[in-house]
Image 1 (tube, helix red, strand yellow):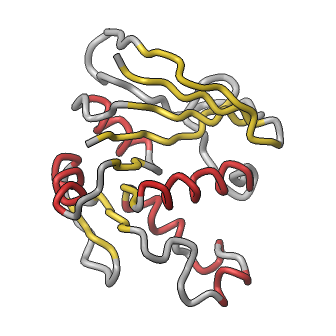
Image 2 (image 1 turned 90 degrees about the horizontal axis):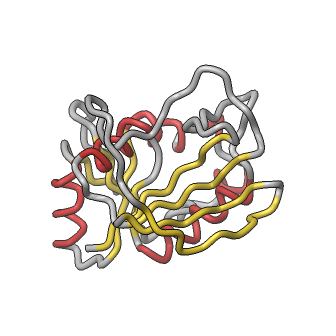
Image 3 (image 1 turned 135 degrees about the vertical axis):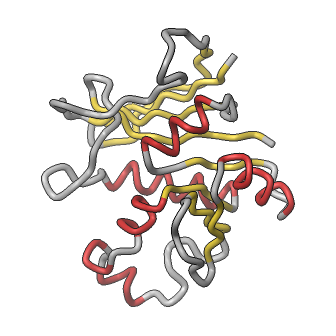
Length: 177
């Protein structure tokens, strides 16, 4: 199964933290939605999933859409303590998420929100490709994407594509070697 990690980074290389002062850019969200629809799924952490489904963060247009923006997409939430949610599959490990999607017949898994989730997939070498959206913002103290939190090592990558998304966002797509 091909696994693609999709993340937004700041211009100074941190894992971008979105919030009221730094909301995600529409172009990045539209790109994520298109990639999720193409894959037919996405894997997300509990905190990010809760933020995504928080009624105060959902537009009026989306609230009126009973199908939701991810209708027909398999959503897998990675959490060790989250209760089951109708229409969402909750798993406890990256391997369990991938196994579930393979059993459902998916050929690609899209790994989305949460630095902890991204780092767990990277550390376990379960990522084939990364998509980084470089946001036009510098951030102070931030989180990093790590292939190994305990050791200093490198992982070669090969540039597959580079394109502007709009609003000064540049998307970089790499294959992990």
